[in-house]
Image (cartoon, rainbow, N blue to C red):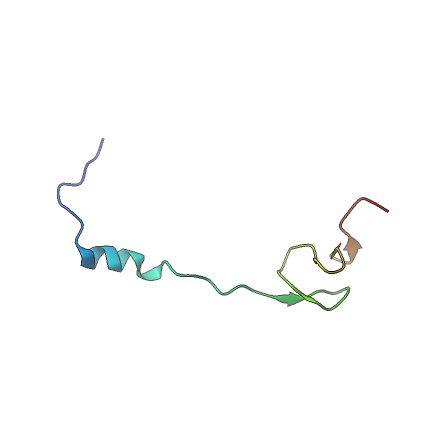
Length: 58
């Protein structure tokens, strides 16, 4: 098993983690009701996805 020979310095740790940050959440308008929702997700307000009801209950 590979084992590092030396301790990773604080500078190297920070360089590695420099790009590890939170992403901005994308929001789109629902085509059915117009409420904001995440893309490729069922709308929590009306329950529609791509113009159709997402649940099988009718």
